[in-house]
Length: 187
Image (tube, rainbow, N blue to C red; front, side, top):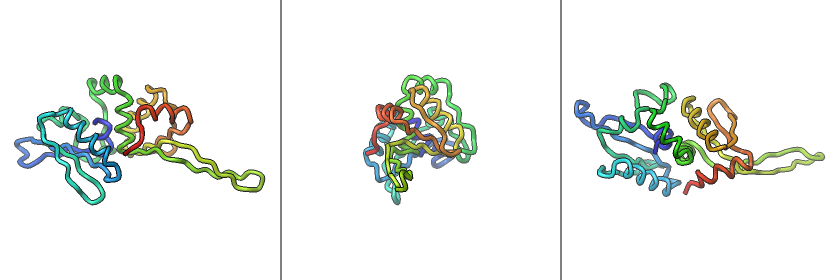
């Protein structure tokens, strides 16, 4: 849930600001209905007595739930865009990520990443030779979220590198296989 929130989620006040009821909203692409259902189940696990709404939007679905407790569970919440403010995990969140690093990376990659095939063309003997290999890419504008992803990949023993200032690539065969153990395909 933390990975999904950091990628595609936000928390906003609902109704009368003096009552301080918050809406946790996670945007899920319609292309991945299984991921949307995982998001619903994760919210229910966090707040089992809260109602979870699934609201259809153009090209995506908003999964949301109201609670006075969302800012306590996601202290990274704040005004403005995530990449324009510091994203630091609370000590208790660090303990959870340390215990479940695969689930954290799964949430991050399922929100702002993908696993696909990289096609490469190389000239060999005067002709073009094509080959392809699987890789993961994770893209985010927040340097802090990228750092959290990289630290967690290190914890899992997954080799990675920056391909751009805002993009992490996992492309070595053994690293992709290791990450497959935790992330798996979007469905």
